[in-house]
Length: 306
Ligand SMILES: Nc1ncnc2c1ncn2[C@@H]1O[C@H](COP(=O)(O)OP(=O)(O)OP(=O)(O)O)[C@@H](O)[C@H]1O
Image (cartoon, rainbow, N blue to C red):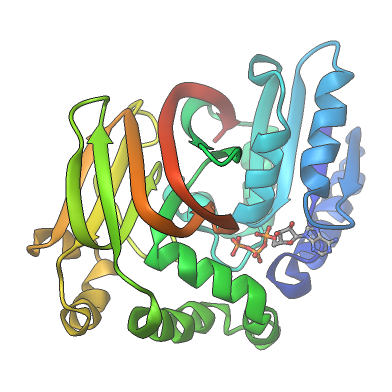
């Protein structure tokens, strides 16, 4: 049995249109399925939790939404060994779909889900803060600059407005430029894989990537691999903001990593102590500002149909 979870509001209503297309196809083929349409933020987590708590066999869960909806779903899964995930991207960023090289055509994607060539286990990230926030992420979790962009995007409502005109990606560019000017540098002590902490005084961002892309196609971590049991960290520090602005286009192609002040490394665990709270994002959703953050890669956790 397939259960579809649909976020009708993803990409300002595109989710609903894609679902109508898929539903028609499922009905034409006389396939048996169930579905739930989300009605409010975090509803996808509640739906998933309810489904998991009433399971007798394997649940084939198909998400129609953006990265934020997948994030809610993985945070609702209580028994990973009984769930197989399918994903039909309908969001504005679609970084997960891009990284997994999923077909852009939803019907083609549905075809793969109905007849998957394989099931693969992928890694997911786990984050905990000393302030009490806990969550899982599938694409990335960042602290500082990228999280401030997410926070402002969510608060301003500009994404919703621009999505209406098919200009969702422009949102990130406009807000990124503003945040680059206004977002403060952070002082951070970072310990990798439980090793000794290193202090950095002028940190712009610390981003832990499970997949290569975030922010709608920015190749933050060209070396990220969701099957290797590791997070790929991009640490940007001690770079003048003007230089960062000049370097920004190189992120599109993952060429930023060759410049001084941009460190990338892979690890299983990252412990971060900040001298003042900074915004954190988890798959583009911003739960708040924190000072003590711990990130882990949980390897081979989620079975997906690709
Ligand atoms: N019925 C609903 N009404 C309003 N908001 C909803 C509803 N269902 C889900 N949401 C919220 O919509 C937000 C955005 O969803 P999602 O991330 O899937 O789409 P997106 O932002 O267009 O895509 P992406 O994350 O790929 O940029 C999520 O924070 C989710 O909580």
